[in-house]
Image (cartoon, rainbow, N blue to C red):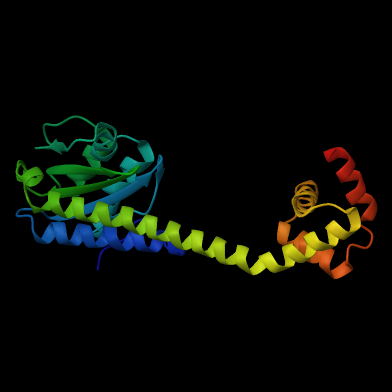
Length: 238
């Protein structure tokens, strides 16, 4: 089972991306010769989401880069192009990452970035041997990353659609009480429905309450006690 170094997966928004990242890392390792492990990340609008690695020993190699903003992963995210280190014994970039990688026995790595619709996914492959990952950008790991990123974008759009449907359902459920409240305000002010709805919305704004809650209050009291407030608002509206 893959190890999640930062397992903030309690909410539904993060659980699905974490699962896709884990699957991508595992599949990339299985189809890449000389690879000893993999790590994946996803970011959106500059904010990082859960990262996944295939072995606990690789977790610090990902975490140190995300914390410091220095390493193959941040460089690949910024450039939008693969970042390779053929031999960490000779490559002196990213001192913290380099020291930690060598301490873990990692001699080479390559990070592939995938960018779609404001989403950036990275896939990093590690090897115990120098120069062992030269063909990765042209191999199956590239196709797997493309597929996973497309899936993440689709998942995000699906969740957005569900949220929109939920908002629409709420609006439909509260519409009857809003209509009743507008009818009461129309009677109190002798105004049309547009004016009544404007008054209802203005009360919602000035009292920092949901429109549906204001409407429920108007219906429950039949508008009693609101006559003066409604008249004052109507006068301001002109």
